[in-house]
Image (tube, rainbow, N blue to C red):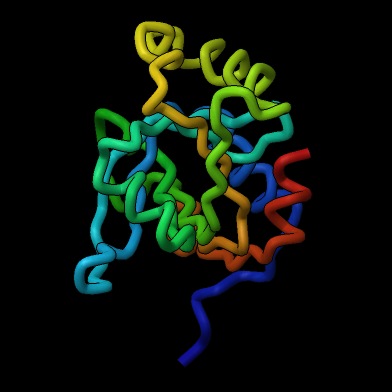
Length: 163
């Protein structure tokens, strides 16, 4: 059987970039520290100043506590449109590691500004001490560009897409 994975090209990288830039939320997958089983949560997400996925999380959330114990995760990015089969719309499954940026950290102010520019309602709670910004360092991804358009992107492809 022929592989459905196409060679990664500039068009695939551009689609990955567009999905990252347009994102306002993502499905976050992480391991539950109580039994190492997968869990999924929805998180607010924006492309940070360098294009890296950026979120804001409370330490009170289950996913935040889990990522602080084990930062390996994945994000499903891409919103199905109102019409049509949701499986035909592009989506990016991004493997990553999470890094928490706390209040007072050198880059916190710039990242907070970038986050608030795209998620202005977060102004209500971004200053709470239990909230931290979370940068996701991409390790690789699977890009589904729609029917018959599957690509594997490595870390270099993702870095190129974020430029």
